[in-house]
Image 1: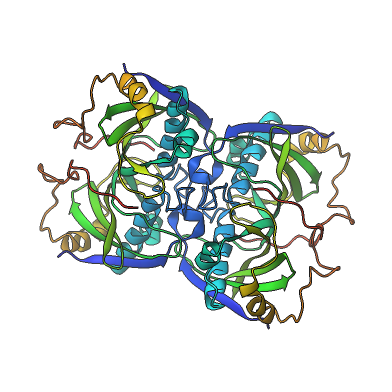
Image 2: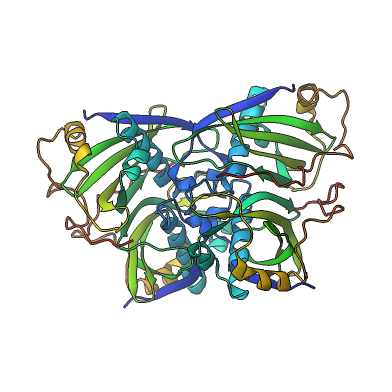
Length: 158
Length: 158
Length: 158
Length: 158
């Protein structure tokens, strides 16, 4: 299994909506929290990456919602590197509560220069680390037969 | 072109993040605002659907981010029905600023009973309307060769 | 010093705005997180209070912002009971980062029945606990020389 | 009555919480939306103020919640200038739904230089306009009998 970072936290009241469950937009924020932890544990804290003059702009995200989280729950979010290409990369995520899988997803990112906001290659200082963590020897993009969550509807009991 | 609803509004300061652009989680909230308008214009306001005893739970969402929105921008979000199956349906979205495409995406939903939170068929009272709007004569799920946004990275100049 | 609960957590990227600091609305959400911890540590978890058929509706809040929090900071929020009256109560808050005071504030609440949404007295099962924690022997409202807008509770029908 | 700006918009689903009403933190975001409109109508759009090199940092806010807003409601927020001092100013707000008053509040701000984040005087180019709108001939702070915690401005280094 690939190297992964995990965060654990309590669901906030403000994260619920009138359905009585966590509003689905919050999972992107939770993904981000786990991504931050991932970078920190990799020894490349994201605030330092920005300070170097780079942003990791998000170009695509997908979320698969299976079970709902509720106020008072303690949830865990795991984050790992799916793949690393020269100018882009993809993180994967799993949100769980105890042994229940709540949500999975991925976010795809592009490196840009902070000032010009133009796409660029991954900063030199991160390459070795990120390739190693992704268990890659060279840059490569998404596989052709890549994920896209299954099309069969899953049972939901939020 | 399928029937679509549109909302137009100003970007809020609180929607920005320290990158100086709208945080990507907000697009799901904007999609929802357009979906609400869609239901209202279809003559089936979502508050009434909930009052009938149903929720349209979200099971999957995808967002493709192309250009960033900024504080002070006026943005438009268009929403339409991609397809309608017996127990699920998919909405599509386009966020634009003037003639620039900022973000596209979709959300997939499952009907559940409000009390039991168990999956169920689309409420009888909505069927005729939703099928007509989706330009379908019968229920059908996602096509096999369905979208999934192209894998080629797009140029981004947020 | 009165009994207080504390939470500690990392600032999230999504909590920042284009000023490069945490958007001021988030402090109310942080206060809430500390208030939740307070109730849990008092042996009266807020989800249980709601399950009993009560809401602790917010009627007033004030925040004094002194120093800004940033993405990557670890912040602490302390919460305590300012006073407990028969139908209302007030919590106080302090947000700190290391030994720096960032924000203080209070929230005033009114008890309402969950179903009717009408004001009511504090649930019997909480009285002894909350009075003890507030270091009060009987219910009493805000002090006269308290720095607040008005002491008369307003009717709320949310 | 002082010159005021107004915004009108629909309540978003994501703004609700599990109490079935709008979460109280959102009112600060709504105040901000009205404050933005205020500056625009005064001929001094806030994005231009930031571009000039200034921020209007928030130092205090208070909200009085009377009635709750719900998903599907159309709400109006009015914003006006309470007073203008040389380095600070205060905006007042009223949130209504039809003829019902939902929430009132104020936000107090301090001018800071964007780069240094140090307090400064109101930008010269805004003075005449803001004084006229506030119906003041000279700068003055909050009145003594004003319902506020303290009149002394605190140093801010966000």
